[in-house]
Each structure stands twice: as structure tokens, then as C-alpha cells.
Length: 238
Image (cartoon, rainbow, N blue to C red; front, side, top):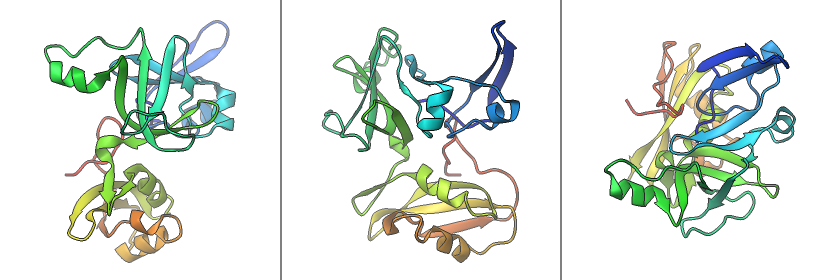
């Protein structure tokens, strides 16, 4: 789901009834720095390339439901399901699937990709999320980015958010690395805003992340270029 990191395409317009702010971005932060700075209210729409808008959240709901991408819009059904295709319990992580008249029919000349993406009339988005009792969706990460360490699911975005809380970390990206013991483990690549040792970063994660989620290795890049990311804002291996 496309929801996003402020700093991508932005436009401001006067609709006659008031000034509106529109953002075209990747991962959705709890609050928009741009809307806060400009004091502009705004609705957030969460979209998928293959069907368009799926969820919507109002300015008031964005505060009460911080971190949520909203609820399904009209004429659209949104579910969060497990690997068996069953609905997840509130707060349980699963894949977002979408149904509606605006969902694509197929991928052009790619029947296998179509069969994988659309099953029983539902579009499988590839996004990991939880849904609460009121139907608000909370996107966490992409399934393809998930790290499986010792049979446990580890979400890079969760670790990156913790790393970015360190005052000397200007940017961070977490990727999976092979592990003889665990199959995979998390490795952090971070860009420093000042001199810092890897052990300091590891100590910072203590108490903020479960032991199996903590990065095993940290590569410290002592320059101020941002970590490479894909179009969704996720860290990529270089």
C-alpha cells in the first residue's frame, strides 16, 4: 500500500472552500510534518498501484488513530488475513487484501502474476498490517522485506524506527543476512550524523526491541548521504 514518507510530491491548492494539502508519498508517518508546519488539515488516502485508493482517514482520526492508514473507503472491502486466507484477529499481523470495482482485472500478458495477485476476487497487496476492532488498518512492512529469524517474523521498519530514535543516527536501513543458527538475522546499515560506535547502537536497541529482533551487526557509515531505499521507503541492499 502506498502511504508515505513526507518529502515526495506535494501540492497545495485553494479549492474555494479552503486550502488543501496533497501529498504523494510512500510510508505514512503518524503526523505529516508538512501539514503541521503549514497548519493545513488533510485526509490521507492509502492506495495500491493495482486498484487505487483503498483506505481513508480524516484529520481527526489521524490523531486518535496515530499510525493508521484509515478504514476501507466506500464500495471497497479491506481485510487482513493469515497465510491460510482466514481473517486475522484484531492486532494480529497479516496480509492486506482488497476487493472492489476499482481493482485491476489482470496483469497484461502475465497470467501467473495475475493468479498470484488476485484470488477468489481479492487483490493480495503484499503488505503486512494489523487491523483493530473498528476496522482501522495499520501498515507495518512489505512481506518481501520481512526477515524470518529462528522461526520468528522480524519487520525491518520496526527496527529502523528504533534506530532513528538515536540522536546520532541520521538514517537507517535494516536488511536480512544469512545466519547458520537462525536462518536469517537482522543487519543494520546506518548513516551517522556524528561519530558513534556500533556497540552504542546495539545498546540503544536493548529494552526497545525483543531480543530476536535486535540487529546482530551494525555497519556505521560516517557520511551524511541517506541510505538507499526503494520507492516505498524500505531499505535496500547495496
